[in-house]
Length: 316
Image 1: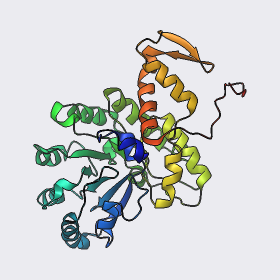
Image 2: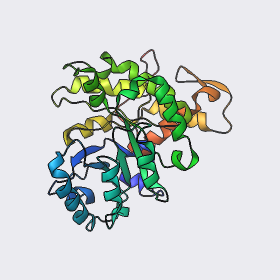
Image 3: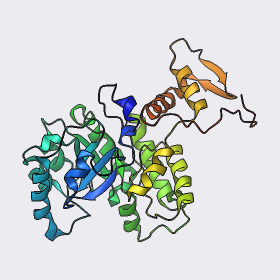
Image 4: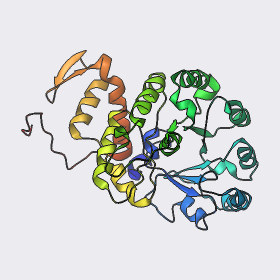
């Protein structure tokens, strides 16, 4: 995050500001140091996990550990802190912890219509931001996702949903497959699923996150996948290791030409249609894109290494 830029603004929840969240097991001994930014200061957001990262036998001790660590969480405007609740019962236990208000919100795994009320009934009257994770077999059913969208659109629920997370590995597991090295998610059956989720949820104002890239030794394919994530309108990609974070966040910097066009499109005096940088700019159809570009610029800045060029390759 460009902390010097964001620190001059009121703290706000934009999906882009989460950057590349890193999941960490809730039983880590250094949990407090990570939460406060003393360790891994480059992280914009962390998610302390009580679900897949823990065995069943580790849950009770991890919740006790998390409760003790919460006492030492310091206020921060530079790092977002979430907890992934294992299930609705664990969410209830988390909500009862002293100092739980020091976190920003919860990730709700395996989310679907069946556990909708079990989660959201408990969150009534709180100010926590919520990130439901779409990773069950219902995701393959467009009708089920449309029904879930309608449930999310309730006023008291919509306003607290920060983004919807796409659980890529869980969805691949349901298909009995794992991505091969050298292939992006968009070279697998998940390409169609991601496209469906985007077209079901984004028109109603929901942000969606990009699934993890699970290989640490293939930066070329990661870069390709990041471009395709952006092409599909996904905001933020979960990292599996801190070493992935700089590459992911570098991909979110905005090119000078895009910032130029976005600012012009957002100008109240802009003509309905105009040419800029050898591209057609149309306020009626490009304004949402322009808002996304400006949000990305606020969080990540401009890609200074990119020359302002037109599509013939000549500097302008």
